[in-house]
Amino acid sequence: FREQSGRFSENLREDVRGLLGLYKASQLACEGETVLEEAMAFYSEHLRARISRMDQRMSREVQRTLQVPLHRRIHRVENQVGREPS
Image 1: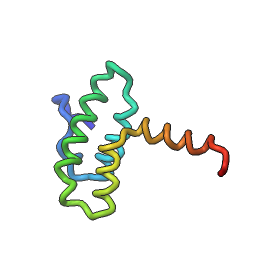
Image 2: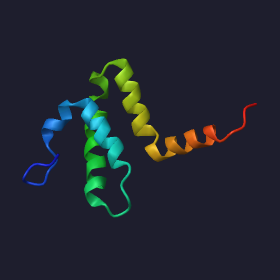
Image 3: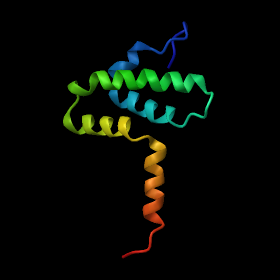
């Protein structure tokens, strides 16, 4: 996903699904993993810039992903699964 210069490939910005997947993957970075931290910033910037040109469904998915980090969503699912039925 990087060019020989070390910069992230600008060709990626045309592939919204690819950007979204890579953004989600970058959220799994551990502290100090600078490549993934840089990737998150790159993908976030390009996803935000494209939201107005996406169809409504994709726009909602991207906005949700940018607003709620993956690790917070996983925690919520675990909490729901462990509950007793009302």
